[in-house]
Image (tube, rainbow, N blue to C red):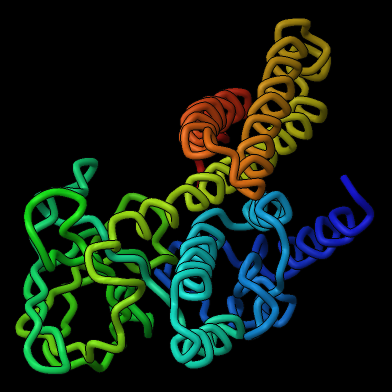
Length: 340
């Protein structure tokens, strides 16, 4: 890592240790969306990490963002995962927006005065996102949207919604992207979903019933929304993979500490070769996963033609392997691993 990256790594870890890790369990148990803490993170430049500096972004690289998200996730994965989505929204507006849109939305997103949500998934279209059914009809100088979005992170508690809606024929070429403020007429939210985890990040259905959006709030040109959404997700895949890395690193660290101090049969668990081998394998996989994600981040920054595939592969590999590391760490804790 460069000296600058090492500084950001240290800053992120200090924030994670001070602000996130001590509160993570309480936030999850009480379903607290820690907006004040997110705004503290924004004071460090983490609200629009890879948006340009012109309108308040931090102007860092995708690799820098990956380093930061991993470090923050060592303290709280769910909060960092939302932060990564917010960053994706800020970048999309900064990259594809008009000068007026950038001036209006990027500065308050960078400070997290305004919070963003990304709205692509629908009740009937998950992986097949190009089959979405939310419709936007042009009427005068506005669009009228009808439809719903599902599993939207932050929904109901955030302020700016990037919504993909169909303005043309079936398929990806008929989709456009809209910036919709929380107070838009016809925009409403379902009940907060009851989840098995990540409870400090509210999740709701977003519903549009004759939702009126000024034509000037279209992001990019008409029918280019699917490409905008996919480009956002390329970085989003790196971001969420980085969150998985943070969870795995924290789990590995906890497993090493526990097996070093936990005594059975008159000696520490780590005195058993099988335990040491397990720890070594976990550490090796964390490093391999990290390199996969960082490689994808660098290639995305360089606009390499194969970067989209690398982002998908990095996310696939890192999230799967990091899940296994977290589970292995839980097993090494024995019964204690199942206690909150």
